[in-house]
Length: 189
Image 1 (spheres, rainbow, N blue to C red):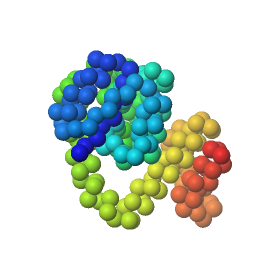
Image 2 (cartoon, rainbow, N blue to C red):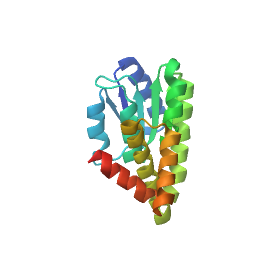
Image 3 (cartoon, one colour):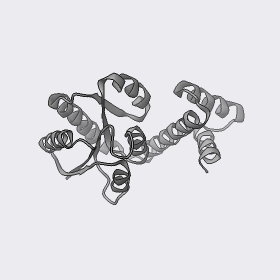
Image 4 (cartoon, rainbow, N blue to C red):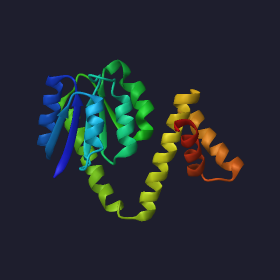
């Protein structure tokens, strides 16, 4: 059964998203209003197939929740935000594979994005069997996490963080993953 988590402080929007997800075949839909509660559910036993976040939430904006979910799950993620910031957020979140949808939410656009994510998840489920692909996916997650750390603590842009990791890997004759793990360990611990 396809499992969806909807995180939105707006009950009207949450209802529209829930109905659309159910129409698109998601039988198990959890609706939550805050980021901290969503984190507990996302890290629970049954991993969701899709996570839809309507910003702002009760206890946070929602961007960090989307980034964390992208790093820690294989779920497809949609972030809904005001049209004025949608393009900027889409640029920032592109590396995480997060879809950004501008308000006002259009049922057809939401349905299209949910179908697209479902299709991609179906295609990827066959690829997940390969240990090489799983290793590569994990490497990408670690590198993206290190980029986020550099952006957070050293105020790098995403391209600067990418170049920094590449250069450190070449200079120190290490893999990008080794450099990324060192960066995470240095700043996060």
